[in-house]
Length: 373
Image (cartoon, rainbow, N blue to C red):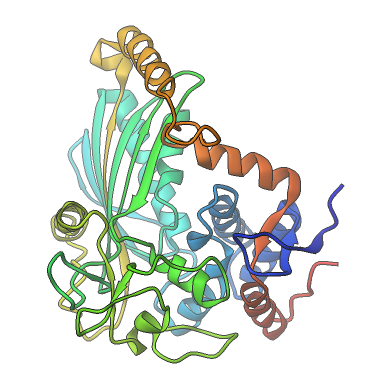
């Protein structure tokens, strides 16, 4: 049995990074949010979702976010105890307002509604606006998969300008995540990525001594490419908060014009269409909120479920039988890496950079929460 906390080394991580057993980490983070004023159910949802991102290998959306979430709660940028309200209801389509509640509360409510409506009508389109940070978008695709549904999710961050469009050096987009889930029996597919070259959370992790950024992930005002987190955050302490408002540079879109174009559409669909607002121009409220437009399709209602399952499984097998460029690295399907990482981290613990762990401990101490034994 792994100790609750241990130190290890790994070539892809900072030296002597901290390994925390998943169950202990879940309970510890939940205790922090209870101490911050959330009720036990909401605290548990936040903790489990953040831990789920770590387990999937998306550390940028994991427990490294705890200090920032608490900071947002205390500043009033996110509001505890909120429920999503239905603003428009057309049966197979609906629009919900999250009232700046925690994303881990209001986004699952929007997803649950979309699943129920798709199971009733065969298809559903659900918009969500004014949600706190919803975390890893792939989590919602996985929820739809468990219900047997295909889903597509466009996400934006209203009021958050971090990413330069193709050909530019100034911030214009949010990181604008995109996710698709496909429920093949025994072989689900989950596509989940930010349209930026790296998620802002990966810059956060790198600034805390984690895995370095690609040398072309960021761009300076003069067009110089950079992998230095200071490009985005400006000066910051070794342990403590980071603010993108202090930096002069931007994150780059992935795939040159292709990622930039997809980010543009995420802003249009998740931001402008839902009425929650796009990344900019930033208004005087200083509030940052997620928008999400989700599509749900039931293969059973579509009338091709058996063919879809058979053809889809055959195609996945054929693609994965492709000769690998590197014999030690087989060709993978979307979601394979996350599944393998989840199994490993459940067995061996969640790796956290020492500075990330210390920043979480500082919040816990301030709120009177005891460290894991």
